[in-house]
Image (cartoon, rainbow, N blue to C red; front, side, top):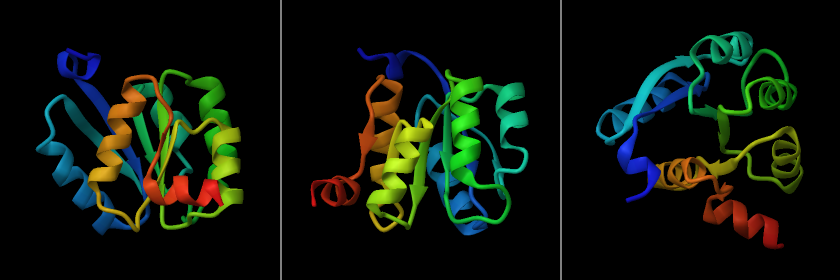
Length: 142
């Protein structure tokens, strides 16, 4: 039995598209041991929210209004290392992947793939492993 099967883990989503966050929330409600704690429409208040609620997983889009998500991710990774961030975006480019990893992301998942890829990545990150969806791995291999 792995750690995921024994504990409840909290998830915070940062995405300006309400359809994406609503779909993820709905899927998470049906996933044992994962508890949705909310959504932010941009990264403006992300650090404050993570410092107060200490989510286990932060799902972070990159294409949003507000502060630079890479800068916020770097600060978040430094100040709240127990909250692990997975980038969930439609922008799968080598430079973005590299910047996200350098800033402290534990995973990078393409929105162009099935949502179950995100849930696979959450499981991998909760097990202490870095996670890249197949489209991201293919981009890294070219």
